[in-house]
Amino acid sequence: MGSVALAEELLLLAYDDESGRAAGSQIGLDLGMAAAVLVELALAGRVGYADRMIIVRDATPTGVSIIDEVLARLAADTPHTPASWLQRLRHGLRDRVLADLCARGVIRDVDETTMGFIHLHRYPTVDPTVEADIRARLNQALASDDMPDERTAALATLVAAVRMEPTLGLTGDDLVAARQRLGNIGDGAGFTGAVSMEMSTVRPSVALVVAVLVRAIQTALGTARH
Picture 1 (cartoon, helix red, strand yellow):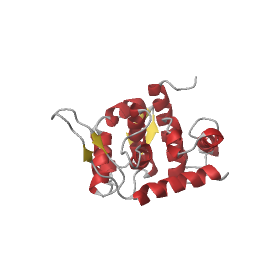
Picture 2: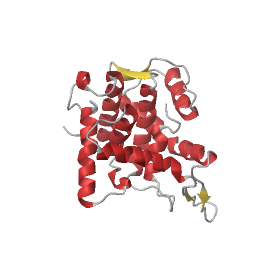
Picture 3: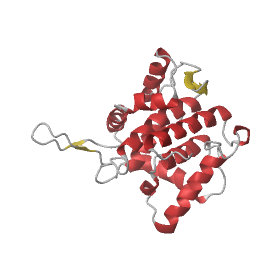
């Protein structure tokens, strides 16, 4: 597991470094972050997908507080569908991730609350190296014809699922090419059903979890292909 969780990576990509405000669909980002936590657990071998449910395979903590809080929640509950867990987890998750990143000095909380009840917060970047590493990994995946590692493939697929491509800082033909490449990564990893799990470049158990979560996101956002 990387030092920066996938949910944190998505959030940092979505928030503008200077203004500290999130771009794009807010619901999409929250669903993507919820999916990212579950993908992280799949990457760590803690959860899987069986009988149309997300199930806990190993309740041993990973050592990452945000991830382990969700793992404990899953272990204490009955199995639920991917769509159900996305809705259950997305509420409050962003605030939890923002608070953790603030505590680590990656971003800072600028409180612009007015009149005592209109709560406005911005989260400009303090340590740009964290996001720079994330973008470098994605840019390398976009520029190469080779399949990236499992984590990067999952991140790229989640970026596409919640339509966060504009946050990559590309425009025109470059943005079109990036969208196509992100789709190719998802296809090659077995996340979209374009290739069989046996042909996936990542572990089938991980590919299956990512695939069902992406489908659940697309259904929730009304972008699923039928």
